Length: 135
Image 1: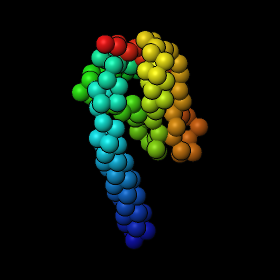
Image 2: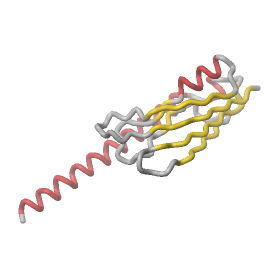
Image 3: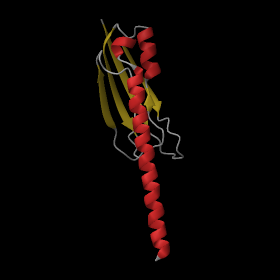
């Protein structure tokens, strides 16, 4: 019986540590959003940004995610991975959007793979379409 109790305690401790790490990453991401500033500050000529992403992962149905940014939105373009056990993953579209604005491009399409660092061979990817409206 003592072995079973020890196993349950270790499993509970691992779950608590995993939850604490997830909460810490969430707080870090919130701080990064605040630090990014607004679209209005970073890209004064931009009136809106729309991102449509089709999220794909082996063994699951594709999921469409849509994000709308206005001038007062944070200029933060990192989107979390939807795989619940993904570690440090997600999709960073910052370079895509920065390049679009620098070149005054209205639309771009592409694909990205999750940047997760865990050992899973089942990472996800996205196909994205970004459109930007300028003043």
